Image 1 (tube, rainbow, N blue to C red):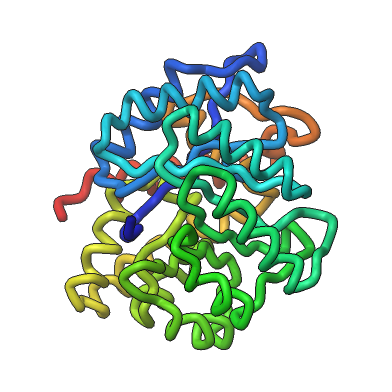
Image 2 (tube, one colour; image 1 turned 60 degrees about the vertical axis):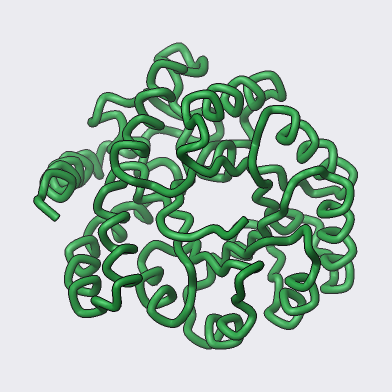
Length: 296
């Protein structure tokens, strides 16, 4: 497996009553298929995985696998704060039909780098799915360092890294680790074009929930060596990137999805977008519509 291009970390749509909205889920996946996304993540942090029951997790995953029909790579978020629980969740994802597991560094417990090597090795060897490492220290309180990634990337069951730190020094240390059997993927929308121009294979994105075709075009331009054209298109997304960080993810992106007719609300402790930002959400929905309907 070699992951590349635009992969969307799907938001999970809910009904007004707070239940899973499977009709909206299907429409969101169809949007990704029509937009040309290469893959989707089910039940990652953008998908409010911590708020889902095991039954809901399995329902979402099986529905996504069935609808993707092999046209999209389906990754399942399986990372937990404990290794045994992560292995169990990875096996649940395997049984649900996922192609790979996206495994975040264990939140809250702050293991050592040696502990991370032991954790990921155990998941790769016992979980039953190829593993994509996921580093997002701003959420987990745990930073997977490049030298630790270098130890892990040689494992045949570990196929990639989603790196959500956007600083250039971090990426400079990671670029040499990329290879045919290990894909580097940006997890930071505002800097992913720069990361791809440096050697990353693609992006696992929040914004591509609402602008999948635009992200496909961005990835295609970088892959074709059209760096200036990619940078120009990326610059038009700067306001959207800023908006998506105005409150905790996935609050802003779900506000735009709601304006696109896909799902309602979030689960506590997350609340809907503050009234003060509703005008910007309306503007961002309009921007997304214009970008998605442009002729490539």
